[in-house]
Length: 99
Image 1 (cartoon, helix red, strand yellow):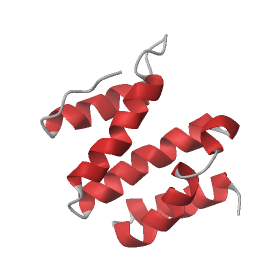
Image 2: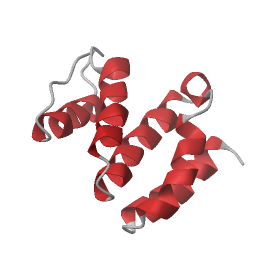
Image 3: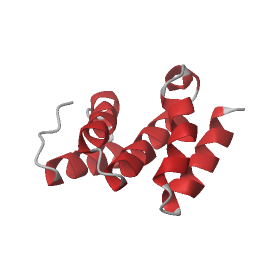
């Protein structure tokens, strides 16, 4: 399956509040080489993975996903809306976002 297809399926499950079903699809994107092939799909999958992990109570996993977004796009110019949102989520959990 292609990264965009896995992202779409993962997003449907994540947005439908079914994190257990979402995670295999999202992880197939975030645990692959798609960061180089399609960085937008990769970062979107990281964001949704963080949401799904947080929904099931895995705050450490959510933190890691959102921190990775901040590391990748936190210094983007113009600023990345997705990186800013990930930083805000980290701060809401009491963590410092480090680009």
